[in-house]
Picture (cartoon, rainbow, N blue to C red):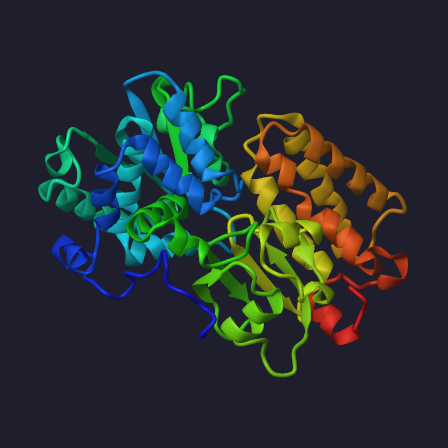
Length: 433
């Protein structure tokens, strides 16, 4: 457990999350106070110097994103916090909302000051409705103490926040889909251009950032960019909140420095697998992430090293799967999820997911057709290249990586007459899946 760090999560467990005074006593809002003493350009430069990349999954430079948003003309700008954490095996944003809600409010105000926005919205996923009263109370207390509202801390900066609840659609984690939902429309992605930074919520210039990104920005302004870059590697500076789940002894949300190997994360932080179990596969970045075999456990957890291995940091999810689960049944669960969550707007995603779902179901039943593997590969490639948004583009990451790393799972001799491919049957018969 000593491998974890506390940069973004420094305030966890140190104050009463229902009391802003206790938050201020441990240094809360120090980052915003320092930001108000700088020019917006200097704030953006600090974020850029930290090298932080967006923590929602796209990994786009936050400093560059803020700079682009600030350059868009218009006085009525908006900042949106994407708290629609719908990626399976991803719960690190929930940890931030539960343990340090004021850090998020602070980060949103800093972002608003940097890009010239006067209002912010938190888009909270429906499944986190139990956190709505906590956030509402935190926002109200921040107004009372003049960390939100007009002339924040006697400055010329005005910024307020509104909490908005989603309806539980996974696709609304995509920026333009989230905005469509907030406007009362069906949650489906927009055509781009125009881009969100120019024409977002209610046609206003809009900046959308993830919960972790905004919380990290507050911590960076509080402690400095150099304190952040003291962690990690040259190309992947800083820390990352991960959601470690599955067949490990110590699942949970942890803050780690970039550069640890996957093996260190699983064995040192996660406590390893249960006695007598072996690793079947890992999935990084949630349901839309690629899967990896045990042979890749030595890969450092950095953007560049994971990319070389055909993996991705994504949302920060790390799902550990042991030998009790078959590759095919794992893929079937993933596919069922995407069939359910596809918004249906574009044909490649809508029909591709359905057809691939039928193919995987035949594999799970032990009765694949001779051309099923090639057909699934072809459909998956079309989805990656032609889908309207990131959901369809990444829905088959697990399947395509399974074809690469676990080809034996799709071989004819992996099935026997009457074998369904369920976890229990596979465990009993010892099939190579």
